[in-house]
Length: 128
Image (cartoon, rainbow, N blue to C red; front, side, top):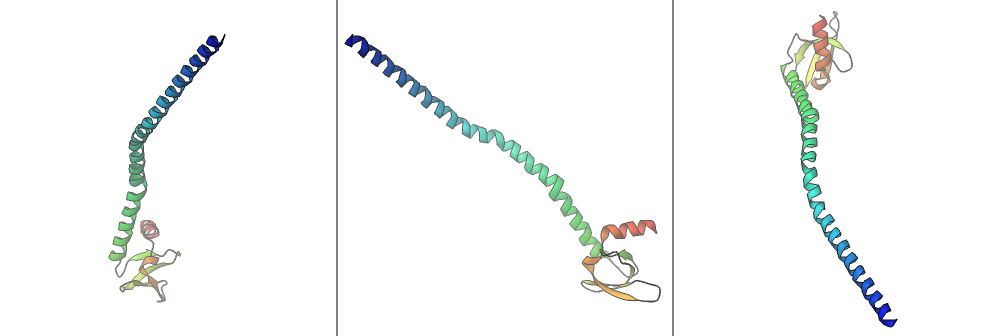
């Protein structure tokens, strides 16, 4: 009977060691698979960055360049619209300011160049 109990205990001990070894192997596989998982996600991350660049950053830079060119090309006699909705004809242009004639009686108002709206001015010119 004692031999039977010792035999059973030995078998249980071997089973526990096998299970421990299997758990250790699984843990190692998961750990090594974690690195592979990151490498698999890297192209996806790169694709997201490219999409963000082409749909957000690049168009915004192009609009900023167009706006900057528009400010540089404003000259006397141009019809413009400010961001506040004021329509007028450019009388003079200084470094950072524009003087607009806003009515036929000669009323003039000085604005910053950045107050002139590119989009609204384009729409105004198309209507005229």
